[in-house]
Length: 316
Image (cartoon, rainbow, N blue to C red; front, side, top):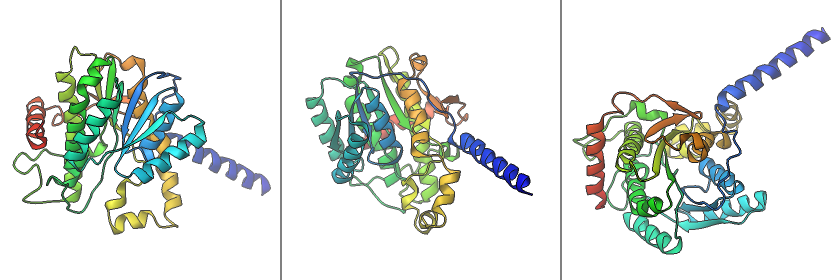
């Protein structure tokens, strides 16, 4: 009887550990350094972005975290400094829902920093109720795509000057369910919070592909990333559905079923650092491996149209 209990316990533990290995997914296990490199990460006050900032700081980078809330960003910085003993991490204010804030941030950053080696467009919102940015853009399109589109373009010359340099855009598996609505890109005539999210994540992938084309020969490469299903605050806008996830009885179960933020950061680190990707650009990755895009996401004509429309909307 006792033997059966022990065997059962061992099997349960091994099964759990195997399940966790599968859930956590691909890991970037190389000790690649980034000494002397200047790194900018948007929305790095929590979750995947915070773990990315911590890891890149530990690998020798000079890290800037650009966030809407200076209070939360400074809390994250203090936490990272306390844990690593490293202080070369800097907080700057950036609201991706405001073109004015993006332009102000870019101007200040360019005046402050003579180089930029790595831009990680990490910030995002998910499945929000209908809301508009300060410039009248549907919030998910505005923050997830248009804000990063403008920011990236304003910093491109500095990235080119520091080449070889990289741009990492966080997308999502949800992009496979998205469509670019040419007739109503800004969701002015109809709105569905999930459809709008999927469209914004598809826009991230298409932006990455078009960006890679326009950067050929410059030494700047671009990558789109799906971090996986991660235990973060990203679904916080999903109303009662999120509060169900956040319930004290449900939350521990999700921590078993979802990736940790550190595991969620692994593909970002892979695309940011791995020397094997130095000649790759415009591709999409998950679990530290290249993934095949749908034929829709590979539509070059649509990607070019989205670029021009985004440039018009942001007055680039």
